[in-house]
Amino acid sequence: MLYQLYEAQRSLMEPFADFAQAASKLYGQGGIFGQAPMAQRVAAGYDLLYRLGKDYEKPEFGIKSVKVDNDDVVIQEAVEIAKPFCELRRFKRFTDDPQTLQTLKSQPVVLLVAPLSGHYATLLRDTVRTMLQDHKVYITDWTNARLVPLSDGEFHLDDYINYIEEFIRHLQGQYGNCHVISVCQPTVPVLAAVSLMASRGEKVPLSLTMMGGPIDARRSPTAVNNLAMNKSYEWFENNVIYRVPQGFPGAGRRVYPGFLQHTGFVAMNPDRHASSHYDYFKDLIKGDDASAEAHRKFYDEYNAVLDMDADYYLETIRTVFQDFDLVNGTWDVRNPEGVLERVRPQDIHSTGLLTVEGELDDISGAGQTRAAHELCTGVSSTHQQHYEVRGAGHYGIFSGRRWRDKVYPEVKAFIMAYDQPQKQSARGSVTAEDTIKVAAAAKARPVARKSAPARRARR
Figure 1 (tube, one colour):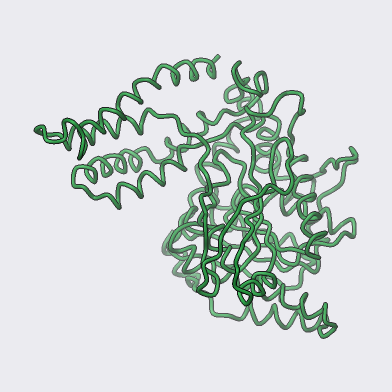
Figure 2: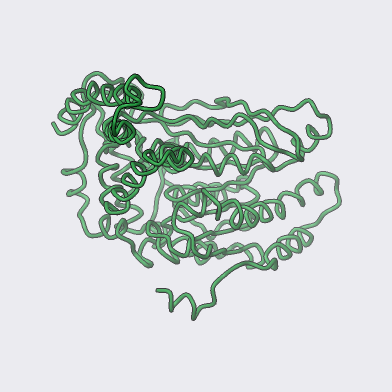
């Protein structure tokens, strides 16, 4: 019933939002009433009302080109694999310059696993744009569950893991192998997917980079963790799960609605959001177009949310935040053939492991991602690296200046350390010992970390 009420309210607000947008243009510069007293304030007020009341659709990645060796390379998106709940999206790069083309062909292949936790994969737009300079990039573009018909079946956490395995195999079939990066929520299912592949004796990714995820949510629990751990499974099922109303392809599907998730996001920092909107209003009055546009871009992304299938969401709550099945070694995953398989991270041996955490992350607390190193006991210490980003919150480790200036150089170097031996091996000039030496060299690079006493003082 709540979902239906929300849709009724959204439909009711739509004409008011359209009116506010039109009024803002009428009172804005060049508008009919642009010269009236207080016109700029009135225009700013209507503009703010419009943005508060409008419906936010799925954004576009909008990456048209990137620089590679100072050459403008054109980007074209293409869907490589279309599954009911996810598309494997490729960002194909084009150039007419022979030297640049040769560079593009030789660069590593990366599967970027985006979160399925409320926002669209476009939340990683900056991550993708930066990585396209030095990598072939694929991303998991998750589908809004209210758009998936009931005839396409249910979606479970096991299905998520099976998707990841299929995408990895697809890239391995095309390129020989690949590197995997998971951001936030997918760190857990991605580690499970690679663990299961290793246990079966399958080829595993060359490197695995996990950023700001709840591998062990018991460590430094945040407000997000506490909610998931302190409420029962039944509470979540009874209070946040609703059926998609009529009018959508997925009508009747049980979901955790996007609008409820968005309410939770805002409730975490209401003062910060109120201040941000007031600053936007002042920027409009001052004519600070650059700051106003930055606000629009952020909230166009932040306010665009998707519904998650109820089975997937509830199983994630139980597995990751209540039973801690991964760290307890009690997680069994059902494969596409219906057979249960135990997740054993200790079976991973040859994959390079990099974990990244933000010093000020209030979503995944300190140590939660780093816990992966204790689980992957089969990976040599020379193949493991951890990086703590000083001064970075959750979003800062994969988007913005800190991501581009601090995190990306570390991720790029780590991937290259594990990609280069593969290329040399194809020429018959490398051994396993060489691989360890290259990885050790990457690990020895100076990394900006706080000392232990400084970290304790900060907390």
